[in-house]
Image 1 (tube, rainbow, N blue to C red):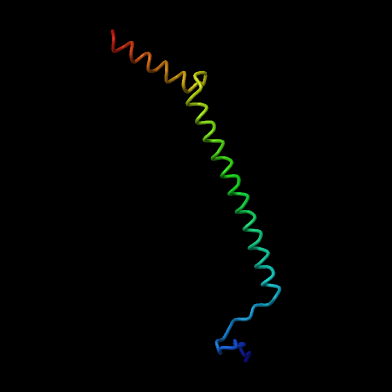
Image 2 (image 1 turned 90 degrees about the vertical axis):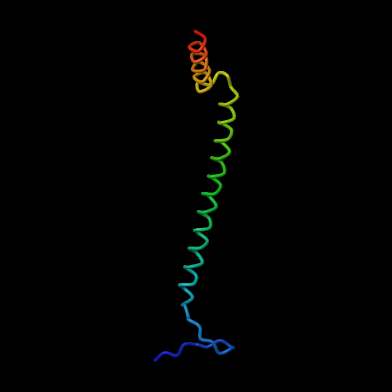
Length: 81
């Protein structure tokens, strides 16, 4: 029977081979980098989305703005006739 090592205070602790520990730390680093990349991409896309929305809302030449304007104009013409 294999004896489980005890800490200085008498508690038992599980022993993990150093190679598994290195692999676990490497995987953690890899996941943290991936999370950082995804976070950056998300922030960039949000900023671009806000910029596009603000441009489309302010620009009279935008197709969305023009469509809204013509729809409102038709509605006003119908109500005044």
